[in-house]
Image (cartoon, rainbow over all chains, first blue to last red; front, side, top):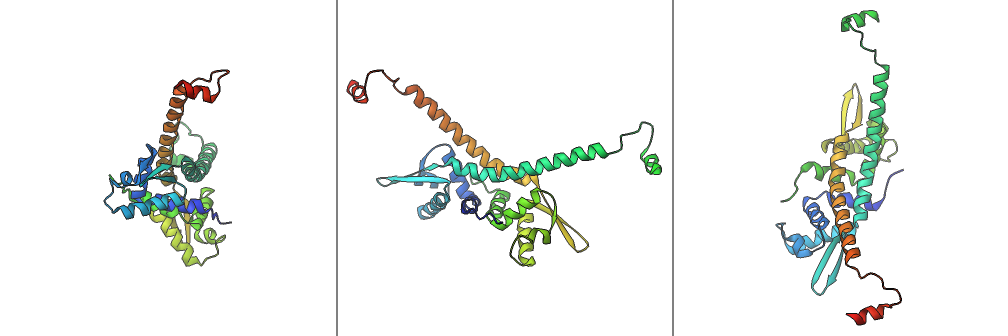
Length: 124
Length: 124
């Protein structure tokens, strides 16, 4: 019964950190080297590399090394999977609330002109 | 520069657990009591309550107590916020890849009938 999809666990875990979200944000605009990714973050290159590894392990980014430079790029598929899980639940909730609204609108007493709320109550 | 929005940190952290995702899944179909939420999970009521508190603290669910029963319901607003952050990045990536595709299609040499790849190379 439990949705143990390891990717979702790790993708949401990765996105729960503001530094990693900033990296994803940067990579959404195009590939970047690890040192470029670290520039706006006040942390050591080792710490940046650790975040990069978390993002790569869950599939949100890919990286390749050429000489001494590791270049990272985003993987839109992982973004889509993480988005879909939430979107499916949000759609389910909104449809249910819409149906509830329609039901309440149908079953509500139609407003009777000239009659106050107290009069409606007396009728019951 | 860092996106320190505490809600996003906590919402993604909450969604990184399969048990909590199962609770969100259940609540998407309608309100439920804490014991109902715990039924498919093999854990103590105390552990279930702890997960409920994590979900409530980040705004994904709301709960209210009537007598001895605590009833939980989903908050679609928090789902929408979590979905939007990912959707905005995914859209950005896809637009960039589309533009790149168009650029490559425009700048590519049109295929020349009767000429092999080696012939194209000789031309340069």
